[in-house]
Amino acid sequence: MLELIASGRNLPENERMLQIRHNVSLKDYTSWLVGGEAEYFCLPETEADLEEALRFALTENIPWTVLSGGTNVLVSDQGIKGLVICLRRLSGVQVQESPDFVRLECLSGTGKSELLKIFLKQKLAPALFLAGIPGDVGGGVVMNAGVAESFRPREFHEIIEWVEVLRVEGDQLRRVRLKKDDIQWSYRHSTGWQPGVVVKAGLIWENKPEPDILQKVRDANKVRLSKQPLDLPSCGSVFVNPPGHKSAQLIDGCGLKGYQVGGAQVSLKHANFIVNVGGAKASDILSVIEHVQKTVKAQKGVDLHTEVIKLGLF
Image (cartoon, rainbow, N blue to C red):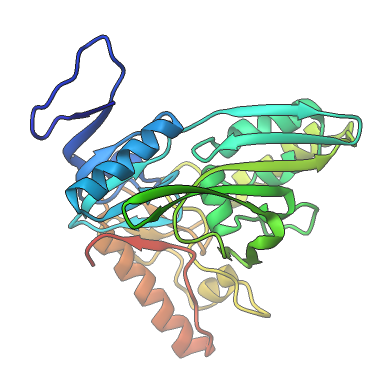
């Protein structure tokens, strides 16, 4: 069921419906708290809602953009044309436990914090990894999200068993379930599942509890809190680590901590974070990113590439 608020079409009040809204600010849907308006916007809560949203885009012949947890994306101040499908309410987890494995079936908008709670309850190693990354399951798949520490697991692909994708083929929608090995995983990136929308993912881990995992998570969180600016809006790490280097060390070595344009600043606590210290615009953040890249190239001879995906009109 669909309700298009923009044109005033309504369905009976006793029927649940997906709302497609017009000219919605995206600031509150990104971790940087920046960005312009979506021409059309919806928050699907079920798989049927997601299919309805894609059918709307097909019927209206407009482009569609998926906004997952809002981390690792920079939304233009000019906004996004067409339909923005925000997945943060497409959330839910089913847990299946056996003597050998614990399996989770997760909708793509499920926050990694929810997975953390489950793995902590089971006292399993992925809890330590998940405590260090923001966002949701879909973003974890798309970005092959990971942490810098050298424990296992440290990247999202290590806990994946399968991924389900909803694809648009002509004027039809088709579900495809891909095994982990059908997808090509690399540092902060994945390919082979496109085109389409990641709808859900199956996670798996050995059912071998670690009694001290809660303490490990607590200790790791203390370290992160001391080293990362978790009290200010950011997208997490901005730049991928170049081979043989750490981006934070390169940026710090160029004296760029504290460099600021408008409300966007290279964090004084961690140089690979760009934080919104108040009133930042996407253009401010982009200016800081580009200045950091040019400076590091000039002083260190190293090219920095972002983890950040730009969305909208730049």
